[in-house]
Length: 89
Image (cartoon, rainbow, N blue to C red; front, side, top):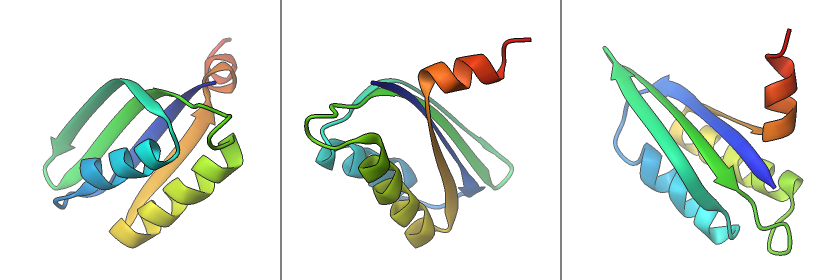
């Protein structure tokens, strides 16, 4: 299952590592990644493929929410098809 993950918050070290580690523990693959820092604001978007045999969408979502709380950043995961439909007008 393809998913889009967005991370936004105050910049600090370890954000990419923590999110990537959580995804690896869930058997997910990072297909593409883009990140930037604007002043002191960290922004990252990832396109990932989840291995639902290892961890389903809800499990990955809960794990990423916990990572976000721990880091003090917002982490949002959306199914790619839902993401695509949201922006079709």
